[in-house]
Length: 292
Image 1 (cartoon, rainbow, N blue to C red):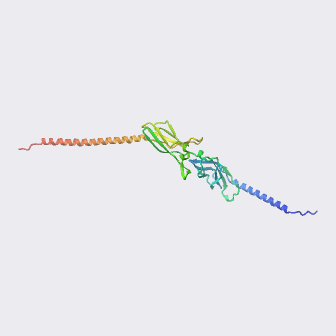
Image 2: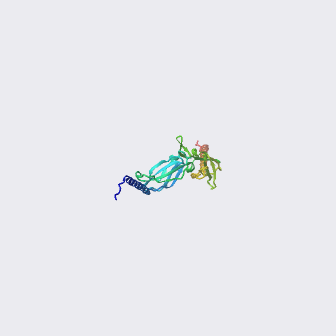
Image 3: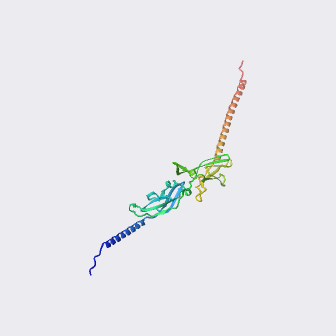
């Protein structure tokens, strides 16, 4: 029985469709296979002090590179540190635009040869970061101090930040205002008992005992924070009241010694003149008379 000759076009189209589908599957499989050598970033952390902010992560890449993206919570992603082999990225210039904003970041992983990479790269999200609440306070610096009598005057230096307003870099005081406090811990140099004083300005004027040396250090504090409130303590400095007394005492002793030396010289000269004057008349009286 003869086989009827039907149209072959539909069979050909089906074969082409199957081939295209098979090729698409191969491409997807190849793409997935290509991602097996790319390691996703992990342990993403924000390192920030006085608003200088670095994003860090692990691991060190092998045959791969990273790109960082950062965005305000409701903003658009912006690329930073393109195709880098580093495991850190400076994002300060982004977060200082608004330090009261909340930021997100993510680290994308690419193979070293990014030109042949056609699929969406794997990435890892960072925790949220709000600079105003989360940046660490740097170690404060004591600008000057002076002890006069029963008063100790201490002035603290406000660190400059990279936050800008009207093309001017702002200080910590400019950013935090009265929210920034300083605590002064002070004690007698001969004692271990500490006292403290707090101010929301940059100066301390405290009562101390006259004639005593004092040691002290300061610490910055943001009272509105629930965590991460305090900075590291500044280096300890001490007054040198005893050195001042020693200098004054040395000066007084020197003056007294000079007066004594001058007195001795004047007395010696006076006695010498007196003896000479007395020796003159007595020598003439005792001289022998010439024979007539």
